[in-house]
Amino acid sequence: MSCPLGVVALGDSITNGGGELQYGVALQSWALWTARGLGLPYTGVATDGARAADVVERQLGAVEAQAGLRWDLGCLYVGVNDVRALDFDPAAFARDHATALAFLAERCARVLTATFPLDLGRPRAGHLGEGNAIVERNARAAGALLLDLRGFGARNLVMADRVHPTALGQVWIAERALEVLAGDGMTARARPSALVAPSRPGRARRLQGDATYAYRHAKVSARATALIARERLRSLGTRP
Image 1 (spheres, rainbow, N blue to C red):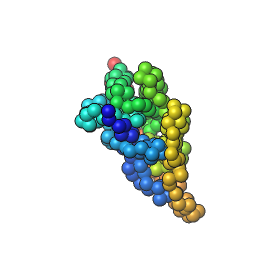
Image 2 (image 1 turned 120 degrees about the vertical axis):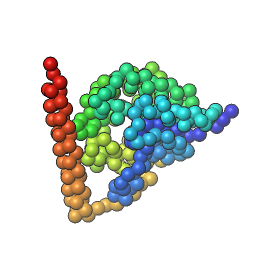
Image 3 (image 1 turned 180 degrees about the vertical axis):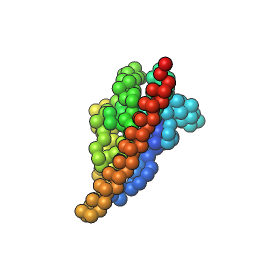
Image 4 (image 1 turned 90 degrees about the vertical axis):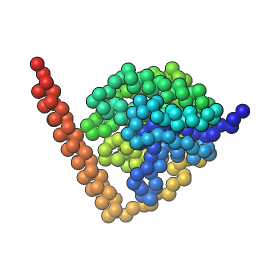
């Protein structure tokens, strides 16, 4: 009988992690912080830009290659790239998300999945309500635990693109994940926030950071406005 191997995580760039330091804190995956909080080993197979179909086509095989192995916890956070896409296919997303959950349920003592922030992306994702309803429905059907991220999005927790968590945002998500897991009987050995020591920037550095964020946010918003205008013109041009 094999011994459980800790935490395995599937998903996109949010779960893959990596990026800029924030006040001296490295940007690591929320799932990795969750594993550290639980005191368990971590296996991450998430990839940048992945949709639910990519998880099924590529990531499940990477886990399955470790034949006969089991995990204490399987994490699945995917769909951000699906619900932001103009070609969003709810039936295909529901099928692939459910397939990934079922795959994890066969190999993990517990499975955790997550909903999407309601203020996601610029332009704002157009299929959030439908996507979140699918995730919630699939979680119930699979007996998976649900991490509610619909309210996620504070200034210091999400980057200017309104998609990717900052280093502290990843820690915040992990702490909420641990709260959900504690409610199901798992024991957290440490709070991720206690494992980091953010520096305390002076006033000049804070102002510089605010100015940089405002500039990046303005660029993202301007690009979003241009995209929306282009799509509207294209739509008008195709009307009979």
